[in-house]
Image (spheres, rainbow, N blue to C red):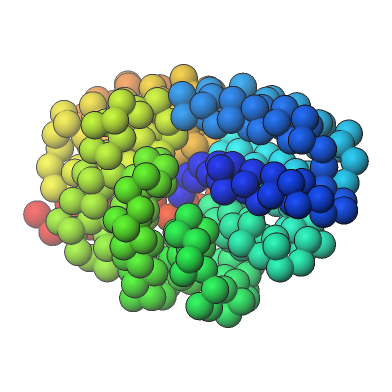
Length: 342
């Protein structure tokens, strides 16, 4: 499952500026803070516009600034956290893992003040493990995070939302579907209580719940969750983000299990176009979508188009060297099983 990075700059900057105002030793100076915040805000806007590579470059500038500023431990930790989450989105799992682990280590040095931020970075690392097919690592870290966060995140809705979503992902990957559904619905409940939460995150949790329900065999409920995920972004003109492509691609596959419709093909084409324009033509996620598209075209008896899509997907897989079984998406086997029942 594709994930985005979340910018909690308003909350964190208030903490840092409070430290400066109170004269605590070791706090960075106000001017570097303002410059860093400006860069992070620019990256947030770029990310929301689907300009992911530009956002990453802006965050690199912010990280460099934090390295140059004296006693800027929190700024460095947050920079690594943001860079790690965005590296995962850009299809750089090794880099993302290193950055997130560094962020976690830095947050640990800040003690209790960094607990919430560290929990969020750990949640992103769990999601990365799940996305790259590492259920054991995801499960271990999820159990540790759940125990540590028990009863401690109720007052921080954004952090609780990220943690519950990551725990749901880990539970799904480890075949605990009942627990996964409970955690996903808890994240949705938190979002309903906080309507100002990031739209991409609101869409994302409905996608995840839809996939959980699909795995349970609750097909129509699953489709409705995916339609909700798509509509959240369409109604707010956020159709140039990866979360939209993820929801739309999965919905296309769900629709296709019931009918060989042009609707599913059109949805998949739109998802592919979004990925091409945002994270590029060499991303493994594009290969996943192209593979699914090739299967849909084959079922529609459009053999030449299917072969072309599959060739493009194979080229990307060979180039990225990270072709792995997708463990958190609609499986093509669902279409085969459905067809055999007819």
